[in-house]
Every structure is written in structure tokens, then in C-alpha cells.
Image (cartoon, rainbow, N blue to C red):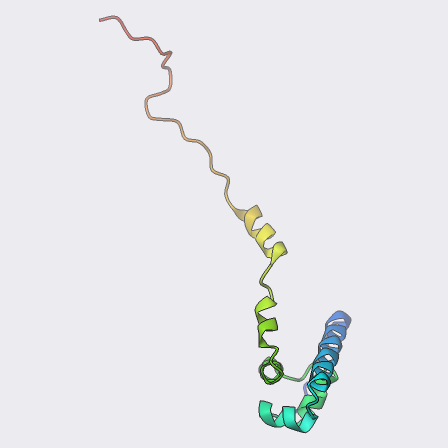
Length: 115
């Protein structure tokens, strides 16, 4: 597989490393070998190692497969679920509704014309 020379932001790289460490810890807590998890996820042991080390070249699909193998797929439902910033931006773009006047109400004073 060709290597991607990705230029990752430092915060993105730190996040990938943290996620990889969390996955490694989850695997070890379950007493699963890297060979077993890799086989169940349909990936090589080297790819699993790259994932656990926070490599930016591992596909999102591979991350998700490993999470399913570890029984952590429910955590995926939390991603972007409570998007406070997005909701605030959306609310800021909503048009404000202006009250419309009823037809023919302009100039009325509440009195009847004499017949």
C-alpha cells in the first residue's frame, strides 16, 4: 500500500495518537492479541499497529472496523451528535420573522363612519 505523506495539524496528530492509545488499551483490557483483532477486522497486524500508533494513513473504515471488533461501535454515535457550535451558527442564519399588517388596517381609528 502506498504511503501518504500527509501533513497533519499537530492537534490532529495528537488526537489520532490518543485515539490509537485508547483502542490499544481497550484491546488489552479484553485480553485480545493484535493478531486476533486484526484478523477479525480483516486487516493486517501492521495496519492495526499503525492505527494504535495514531498513523494518519489508516482509513476511517479501518478505524470503524476495529471499533466494531472491540464492541465500541456505540461510541461512533456520539460523534457530532451534540453539535453546539453548528446549531448556534444555524440559529444565527435563521431569518427573523417580521409581523405583517392586516390588509386595510392602516388609518382606522376604531370609529364608524356616519351613514
